[in-house]
Image 1 (cartoon, rainbow, N blue to C red):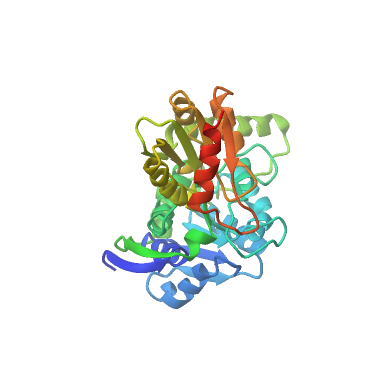
Image 2 (image 1 turned 90 degrees about the vertical axis):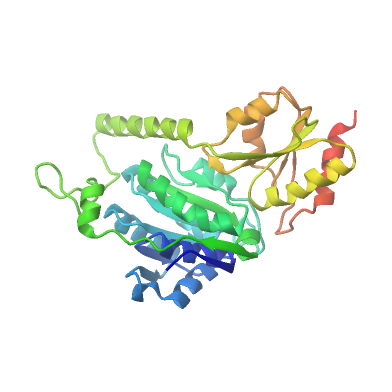
Length: 360
């Protein structure tokens, strides 16, 4: 397939991009608002063109453990779900982090807690960035704010997953997953053969140790001294990621009075707020974290030296706001504005919250 421009939903773009970047397998289970990912795979039938495996597992728990097994073989594998489904995967994600198994996990968020609503939300921020499973571990978290980024972050997610041997989460939401935009899809890339995987990823279970024994992929270690050594290795890797992989986008006023920090669909809405504020004579900058972990702490800390206050806009009760307050270190006020229950805030609501920050 050559480069192509299509009108797609965000969820559909994920499937198209996965096939084109040489994904080996998808294991998933339908749940609103991300079911179009699996439906698009079923429509495109990549097993006939690239040999990619597409399997509807019996549950989310089964999906993530299939991911663990196939990823441990050095295969480029992914899953997708929404909120409550990702909650069921947390044990497997912790296992993969501990065993250093690369994989891409798409979360198209819906409201909660519990079964909640099928409407959009951003209330899985803590689940993704704090690690919902057990143990001391981190996963890279990418936050797209367009259908094009839903496609682009599939390839980026796999690149980072294999570079650092870690699960990567793409934290989308029902707005981005369901909306339709023009998307440029890259040319088809071939899948690696088993021989190529064994050479490129010597750690994979289909490879061999220097003494020709099969590699064993596990997160279990019964000797505490060895387990501590492994944990220290993981922490050193996370520090390397934090130093090298922070991604964010700045827009709006270059001489701001106030700033907004928002990710995903909330950042799209906030871009309109910047324009509305400017029309009323209020200069506002917008910082959009693209990696929620590692978080752009230093950039926000620097921004705090230039503005009177920061408003975080999230479609939740306030989760990222604590990371922003940590970055600011109490130098300026940091407020939060958000809506719950699947209600998406309007630009006018956010502008009103901004204006309140200017009142004495």
